[in-house]
Image (cartoon, rainbow, N blue to C red; front, side):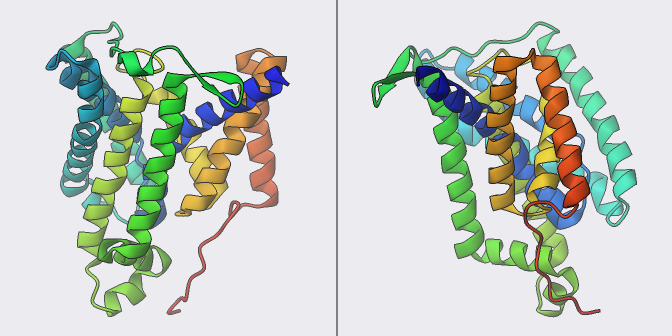
Length: 294
């Protein structure tokens, strides 16, 4: 029983990291069709932001908590700059956005190496996150519980914002039918920019979460970007609930396979399973219901 609970919790913690990495992509890729390969570097920027902010405070707990909103702003502003300078000229050209954002990701990686060096930077774990947390007779690492809670709070907050705020209604309207939304007086250009800020900011929060599991370096984003895209595609383009299900199923499946096989073989099996699933259901778990003008 202990082994089963441990593996399920490990899978949930892996899934929560993947979810934080993918949830921003579910917005930007789903709404604008932009293949943003620099999303991983926004995660990296969030991790380095946590390192810098914590360096300003003696109290590691205060630094970690403060770094969450700061990393959100840093990631969001990087996304807005990318959208305003390059991507707004390439809407409806997804392959061009892939190439351009891949080039931007390489530039950001090199910039991070020049500023922080090639060695990974560790962020201190606050005392209140050290050691295990006992729940229902089982011990769980507090850092992984923190990441899981952060992922749940982020997804719930995003879902509430999309359903109850005017920005959320504009985003959902633009995702479901851009032409109809524009006919209703919604500025799709302004909505795209705000969506990119929100999606990129969520990547920054993912970077903060990652610092509690491993040091941050210039290539940390590349470790998650492919899985993040897979989760968005499997969940259904633009579908938050699909991304949540896909992330946790992928995380639990990967944790179970790594218990049986080595990590590399486990990833290959998961990737093959995803490809087989997309062959049977190319639209993903959920698809967007639209009221097309055509």
